[in-house]
Image 1 (tube, rainbow, N blue to C red):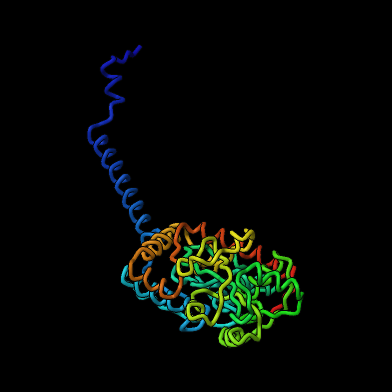
Image 2 (cartoon, rainbow, N blue to C red):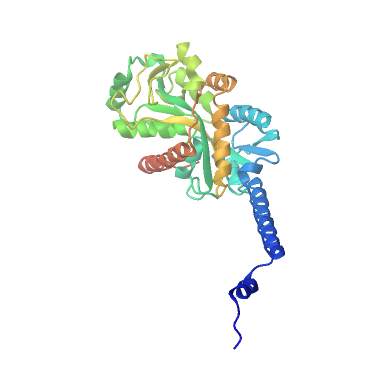
Length: 346
């Protein structure tokens, strides 16, 4: 019988030094490859490479509007920050729907963004069929600014305050008129909401733009209008229009003596115009987060805040959820108002 000594048995199972060294080298090589691939993957994530080419801010309104002016200012500042061109593209028409559709159908990589305003939340109430969903087709990025709406009347109407005006309107149901810059615009819808909340009745006179509406209002041909405060403050200060109340959450810093409708007992009559940035649905969260952070940084720049103030706007900012929640409330609210008032788009 053959007996294997312990020494011989151990030697048969010992790994040769060369083999052990080769194994360690292989493990280090694999680790190196893994680290290299992980580093490459990180460097190729959307947030790390964004933006790597020109960015387009689609503005669904004409040049010269507040939205256009703010978009161009932001574009200049973003270009300086990112080192790539930022182009403003005005896609006008269908109350902003044309520009919104263009962004909704763009690649979801953050290089095409929508710089829109209040109409993005009102159009769905007026148009049953849109080529996009105002909520589902977009990722909210940042709420840029807000501005107050106000109830104004001609001075010759002879009322001293909101309650006197409301009593006059209720004493003549349907006999007095209110003006708006057009059928279905936010000023029209805000007045419809005011009348619903107060139980009053007036006839709507739509104009093709704000100029005609303001001319007839100052002349006393119509008895009220909801106006954007940033565009009419000079007319109010000069006494050509009388402001009875603001529809914001707090009193206007420019007109601190004028009460809000909220403090007059109408908490549902808080309506602001707003401006916001959206990206196409499916844009990577890392890109949305980077965009949100950069826009919030720009909103803190003194020159940006000064420019917004000149346009009567209040800088906003905050997380993307702030804009998303605002839009959801807007879409729901205006659908209810339009349905109750039986408003139809032109």
